[in-house]
Length: 413
Image (cartoon, rainbow, N blue to C red; front, side):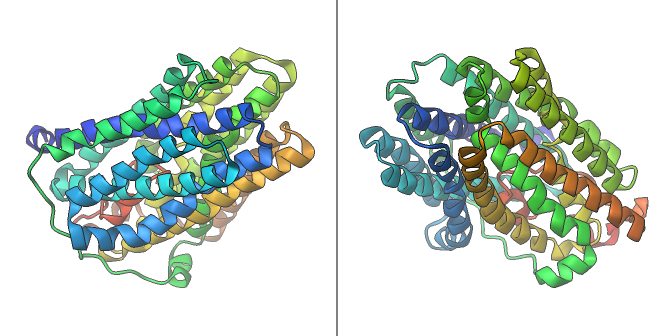
């Protein structure tokens, strides 16, 4: 284990710096767009359009790796991430910002694929779960720091864009100084979405529903909190609280899901998340800051682990060589439902009012809970001996799945 960490420490450093920059941009854009007078619909579109870049990147980046190699591909993607905030700082224009967000999303996709491929291939099967557990903790911890950084800077200036660009540039330094490369992996085969749905009907539905909620929360929640009367500082701290909750409970829930029907754990987590969003709505009505923060901790603790638990549930019904089918579906669902979720929520908030956001997300999670329980009644759980181990692959970057994080001996399935 420690020998593996000694070989990949620079990847943790790079991804930690990178995710701080990604968190800064993901949180600052809606705040800055509101300052510039953009409508909530426009803000939702700005938060949804990067998923188009992520989808494009998931197709093109593997081809770039085969042509240019991992290090140069990562350098190009880091450069794009660094350029995007500079473009937005130079020109306050919705169309320009939309293009910059697509570029930013493409760069994010590339960085995730390269770093997670490198991390995966440098790690033997027996240590992979622990190595990626540390990786996920680094991601969540650094992402949680981002709102606190934004709160320390004057949001009416362009300083935050410059900080995001500098951070993205610094993230490439550890990788650039390591003279190593990773061979391209060609191990897995895929199966059609129709066959995947037959293997795991709930999983195919649960992935897009849960990613919809995660993407919308990360994308427009800070604007919701601001519009219902909370200060920017209170809104940013709520995002920090979400990250704290995710760190606290993701692995205990994952551990529990390894020892019983995962769907029951998922259903309970979804139901608690519904209640948490109702708490958010009540906190908005009463302007109760502490309730907002408490609800955010609950959402991090119970909503954040849902996508990796659903992914683990699907993999329980697959053979090892078929698991790239899950990666393909998660990537597609993230690109489609993550993007549309932010756009749809922005439109509805513009039409009905910001207060509608918790009801939208509570409704989607209630649907997820109901369908999950329905499938529990319709189909028996996978036997405990046939279940794989829970692996926390962060919901917003499924590149690790594409690289075979769940690889194990075929006999274990």
